[in-house]
Image (cartoon, rainbow, N blue to C red):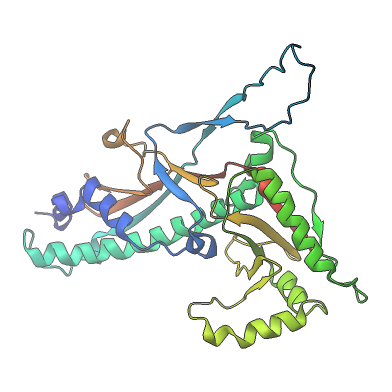
Amino acid sequence: MPMLDIFSNDAFSVTSLTDAINKMPYLPGQVGQLGLFRESGVSTISIMIEEKEGSLELIPTSPRGAPATQNKHNKRKARSLLTTHLTLEDTILADEVQGVREFGSETAVQSVQTVVNERLGEMAAKHDLTLENLRLGAIKGEVIDADGVSVLYNLFDEFNVEANSDVDFDLDNTNPANGAIKKLCHQIKRTMENALGAVPYDHIHAFCSASFFDALVTHEEVTAAYDRFQEGIFLRRGQARGQFDYAGIVFEEYHGGSGCSIEDGEVRLFPVGVQGLFRQYNAPADFVETVNTIGLPRYAKQAVDMEFGRWVKLHTQANPLPICTRPKVLIKGVA
């Protein structure tokens, strides 16, 4: 009996493989670690987002007995967005599992599972990196494909809002005005609060490029505050390196790489702790088994070489759509 017949075991079914890849830890980078995005599965490949514009207006005075001012109802808008479709395949050759014991033994199953799990782990890491890139794009307001150029979704266009003007921190000014950076931070907070309306938030976070972060913490206005912050780091357990709180904004250096980055000299600011602000929808895979089911973060499936039994092909798939539902709160700063 061919060695690759072992893959007919239930341990290698689509259910088992999908369960295995979803149990692997998700540690793609700083966006994922911040826990911004709330995930939910959907049973379709597109999602409908309904926007209800809440408006508060002052009521004008009118003479007694005159017709009353008519209440204006909130308008609803709906838009449809397609989820992304991310697939990856790898091949395990017969030679890679030839050292296991006879078919049907528990040792054989476990040995082959080790090979499969190693490959799934490598593939899961690439899915994680890709998801980090998509989520970072949602924070910027443009969800970008893996080539770093193709725009999948411009969230400002999709929600029909105008992007905020870039905030120039003027960090290369050798003769800065007193408290200029602090005033800019206050201006950013007011802009975000106006965009959020009555919705509460926890704090404002800023992912900085390395050059922006260095220019900020060495700036004449900020240096003393940063030095005091550094001195107190040893008293604050869990404080991340490259993170600094100034004027109510948490500035964090984003360690980019492999396509995920904050552009040189830039900073991206956004509020944290707003319910429903950052969402991720996971659509089902395009397998017969998963049609009309609630989507999972990732899927895995196998196909065996039925003709000669020389290989097993692993297929992994994810169908996420991370978005910011209020892109008007997103702000870009430059040094």
